[in-house]
Length: 358
Image (cartoon, rainbow, N blue to C red; front, side, top):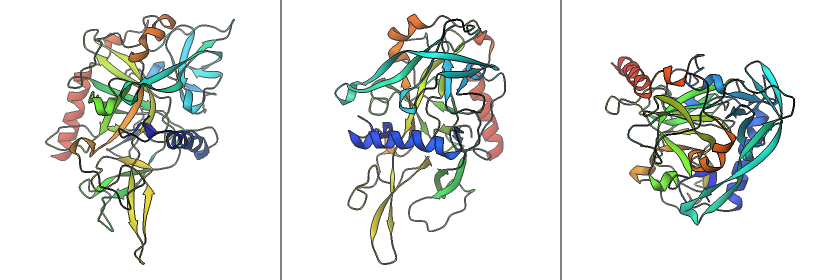
């Protein structure tokens, strides 16, 4: 079972401790709050425009200034992440909806002996007499296999702001504005905002666990790869947020994932007296060169594999659970097909990054 959904076999209680830390820390930042998806450009947080695909179909658990995101998927049902805890109240489009737990679905990881993340996708049902939702997020209706080469993602969460820059290993100091000197950023403080970022889907079996997770890498934008500065990684508090993918066949953005976790990495510290110790890196890291995959970094091996040199974010695959979710949802009434296509968004974002780098 992946620890913080890391693509290396870290099992059992270690994973549980990290997941519990994430849920507790997100609530401790500010009372009841959990705040922003981390991106490369600007100050690291992007507030979505009202017409950004999927944004209008997201609620906030507990109240307008509550914590985790809750996502309506039908006229009377919505979902949240089990590891983060799910409220009985959803604040959605200006109204509060009282709810009760309908069911909880397990996420099964086929590459780790069918290990189960029990009850991770919690389905809530509106109480009797409560008005129904007039709109909701459409579940993925596209091909059985998502195409990593053509699938753009929009990611929403309420995690931390972007904190201080993390110098690349071997540098005692670095220019925080130079992406060639830094490896990423630490998690910062709370903002009480729903923010967004973008990603490109990864279907690498060793990363996505053969479809159990929706995953995307946090990569440094360069002139060569043409990635936008909106490329993103989750932070503490982004749990239960939404991941939308563009379904080209339907010309629509559809819900594919429920935010779960990020890669867990460590750095090696050596004191003035020569004592070596491992430090867990709480941050969004786009270059893992010189870091370590677990806390054996004192005698361990640095991360060098090309496929592992970037941090990844992970969301429970709702597509993998479609057999159970589909009866609880119906096609969305909103005109999602009229919203911008994935390729259109990608082209505009790439033009922005090229203009900035030029």
